[in-house]
Length: 596
Image (tube, rainbow, N blue to C red; front, side, top):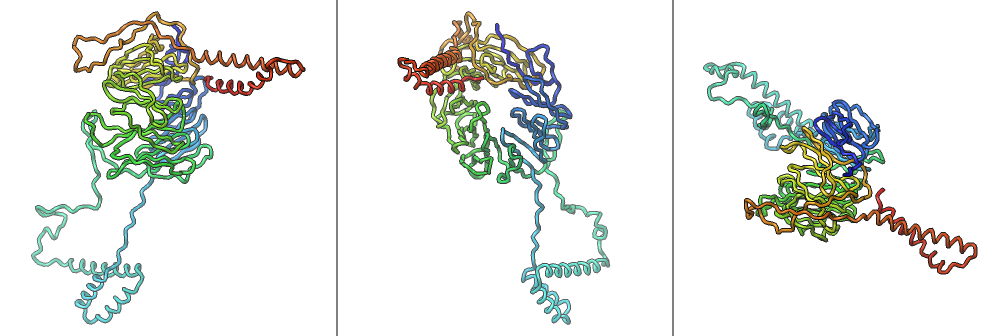
């Protein structure tokens, strides 16, 4: 059986391995790791390492106490330390850094991060004396010292006409004089005064202790291994979103907005999601280059949201899955899906689906797939106008994984389902094979689209491993781990080539009607059958054959042009020469369609 030539990356409790199925490959110890198709980033106690997956190129940065690797795009990574300092690094250069950063993400042109800002001290408002207070002081002064009535009236007149600051100083001086005289009078203790009044340090029975000006901290009980512990809840400081232009090497001053609940970005635009208690939530599109607010969409009863980027095709689009504070008659929370076209500045609701919505995937030709509904679930294919253009077969699944060429799809039942997988050709839906790996949590396709890996991570309670299969679900190898954290294929997309060594028969499901679990008989087993394997057409080879025929026709035209330049008469030569420009355009178009 043939094996894939692509490397499989894995991150486990022992560290990172760049070629998992190679027994001679070394595992490098690390603390944090971010895997990519061409580059990986990992950290030790004192360093950040950015390394190529295909060559020995490696760049080290002395950055201790890294808390997280926020994002990795090519050879560029953004990391945050335990002291909340962010470093934005490309290969061997630190492009940018900032303090008090809580989260960050970046693309090829911009870096977006949320930063805490120090709260401004509250300004205490100075209150001037009212007319009633001034009148009260006048009457008090006249009763206390009648001989100085005229002088006191003259003093109050000057006080009323004085500047506010001077008036306040005179008022404070008057109050301090009264307080001093009161303290002097109270220094002489009258006869018969109680000992409690004499010694305020000894409170009387039932007396309340004096409250200090400092507020007690808010605490929270937390269950830990050692038992219940009390933790102090610190007051959250305000955060702002900031944008840094990688090409211009400067901050975009037009964008400095309060950090939203969720944010994400495409190559040119920023998308934010905000939730308010008393009003509708909102999805907003902002242009990264100048802070222009392109579109704002209100969403009623929104309580949370998840933004999904188009990382595979890098198109200016995004999907926003919103959770709503409404009931739908099931134990699933109510979801609403919005398709965001950032280039066109539109936010459209995908209405022809039902809850629960379990998975999303972007496809080529501006299409996307949604896995929704329950027992059995459905998979719908939508265009950029959010119109449903195709339905795939129903089944028991909650995840879908298209290979990089998008001619094969793996529909899987993960999480609370038993790890069942159906591999079919797309879009014909011809069954290729079935498989099952209990507890599978990772599925990824190889760059050439013929093999897929199944990973069982440490989140599950069974043995961790990475297994390799072809699209007929023939296992070639597997590697076991004590604690596997993540795994994926490395390398750019290649042209699809069908398998050469086909199995004699493959195991597939019978096309029976779905029976709910409550209606199944206890002894009833899932029906299976063996069948001849479905052969996938080699579309890449067919394209190469068409390109070869175009090249041959162009060579004939060049010979005709050479003959006619010498004065020879070629029957039909002029008509063939007129086709030359159209054939060249056709050839260039087909060259772009073939992956390198």
